Image 1: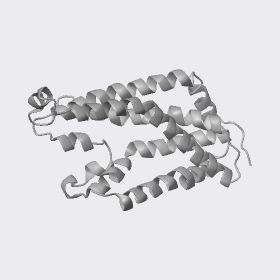
Image 2: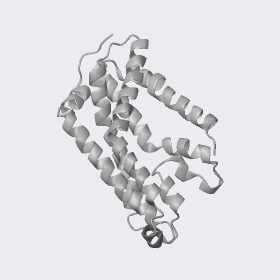
Image 3: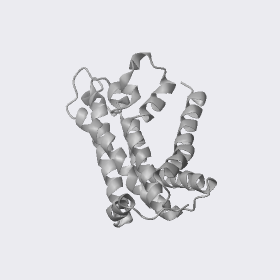
Amino acid sequence: MTIPSNSISQRIQDAIDFDKRLFFLILVILFLLIRYVTNDLILQSIPGYEQLETEGSFTIFHIFNALNYLWTPFALLWKFTVIAFVIWTGGFAFGYKTSFVKLWQFILVAEVIFVFPELIKLLYFIQPSDSNTYMEVKNFYPLSLFNLVDQDSIAAKYIYPLQTINLFELLYIYILILGFHTISRRSISESTIVVLFSYVFCLLLWLGFYIMVYKS
């Protein structure tokens, strides 16, 4: 049964009532700027960085990063579309009618939560210590399970899954629940069930698949 609009959903609707196209442009620029500076810090953590840079040893690295920068907006659009479809399908499976477009727009706004770990990483290594290695800077993900374990003893196939399970991901899941609650006008408990059995289930499935097919 559909529930009437409440103060939480109304506040959320008021908070995200802005031009989503401009927001997307700002979001892409933020990601690009932070990643550009972070990648530069990663290079500086490599011993003999200046000499290697002069010799052109990082040409492939720069080309790869440039392609990654160009792909960023398309990767974000693809991510929003897939997540929106997964949750929309989950809602449909439970018999809840939801606007796909509104859900997509909300997921676009929710992505801002992942700007913070990128920013924290940048600030953490803004003045890297001489003891910081290339892999330490590259694999660092704040408030994740990966940073709570002995990284030297972890097999490579577990790095990405352990990075993915982090505080920001949990906050993101909570935000998705509020978003589905707002858009579908279902209760918080119903919205929680939909997100858990759609987004969270698919995320865990993907991480399990990644571990099984990973080849070092």
